[in-house]
Length: 267
Image 1 (cartoon, one colour):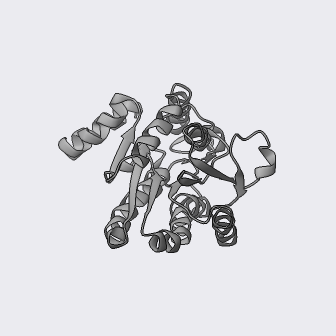
Image 2 (cartoon, helix red, strand yellow; image 1 turned 120 degrees about the vertical axis):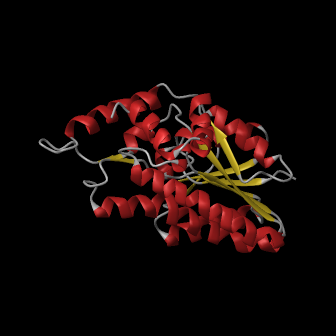
Image 3 (cartoon, one colour; image 1 turned 90 degrees about the horizontal axis):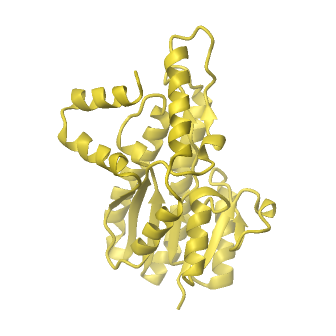
């Protein structure tokens, strides 16, 4: 029987690539978008969902279950970028980012778990970020929200083992998607203590995305995870140095690692 897969944020970027790749491998795929009508050319069905609105989460999961009668895989992909000096990002933007990157995914997980427990099977893959393994300058809020989702996954895994429901993280590095266009950028303030360094860091961040890898590489790893009987807790996909940066953080003294990051961002 074809596995039923639900992908949040399936209308563009990594989510779209995952959906198309899995569809071509004969999975039954549903993606989500806040405005599905804007994507009539989608190669797989899109269901309305905004991860910050509980009623849309409930409705989306109900629609998939009504059509398919089961749900085998949830890929929590919907997320939002945010940049800015920690001192200058408005509180409401910090909260909004956590609503999208942490609380939203948790609420989608909660919505699918009753079905997966009843089935005595299921897999949840949370798309986090390599940025979630370290506090990056001018990306601190994003690092924090994605890092929190990594830890939440570890806790969920242990709580769900008795029900044969599995969960893991996939942390991508930089990929050539439209994430930079959708980020909240705190404005570069004239006269700010961070004006020069933040402005230069923004250029570096955008260049990393523009030069990023093909999002199909993420889709291929997702397929391998789904086909793995006992998935690992953490997966990473991206350029060698991006993945190796996580290893370096584990083995280098803190101040040495901090210096490497500051040199990378020309701080």
